[in-house]
Structure formats: C-alpha cells, structure tokens
Amino acid sequence: MLTRLIVDLYGWIIEIALWMVLFAAAIAGFQGVVPILQSRGWILESEIAWRIFSAILSPALVFLVLVVLFGPILVLVDIRKSVRSLEAASRSSGNDAVLHIEQREPHL
Image 1 (cartoon, rainbow, N blue to C red):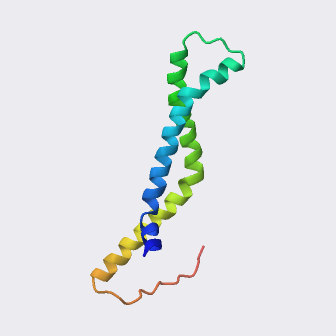
Image 2: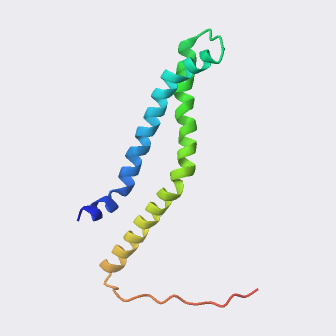
Image 3: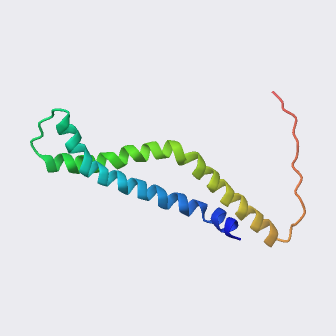
C-alpha cells in the first residue's frame, strides 16, 4: 500500500524536491557569491546589485543542471502517466482483449 502510494506520488515528490533545490540555490546565491568574490580580490561597488544578480543567476544555472540530471526521469514519469490513461481508456470502452500489433516488413 505505501509503496504504491510512493509510486503514484513520485512525480510530485520529485517536483517538490526540485523547487526546494531552486529555492536553496537562490538563497545561497544571495548570501554566498559576494563574500566569495570579495575573498578572490574583487572590489565590488554595489554589493546589493551583485547579490540580486547572483540570486537570479544561481537558480538559473542550477535549473539547467537539474534539467540534464532529472529530465529523463520526468519524461519516464510522463510516459507512465500516458500509458495509464491509455489503459484506463481501453478498459472503459470494454476492450479487455489484447490488441495485436501489425508487423510490417521493412522496405526501401
């Protein structure tokens, strides 16, 4: 029962975790980039502008990394939902029989 619930909510769990990571990246960008730049010897005229810029740029970069890492997983979840909806549609129409796939020979 619990494992089925986790499988059903898998997409939501991933989405909530991704939003939390993006929020953490914004906070880390706001708090951490200016001290890192200052420790590297940069002289910043407007710290608040750099903080706002890094609070916007950090989540954007993290988003791109998350797209590459979690994109395929989310595509699989979407395919799973599509297959489920097709199964539900075939059951509601009363067609419980297996549909045969027409095999075609490749031709040039």
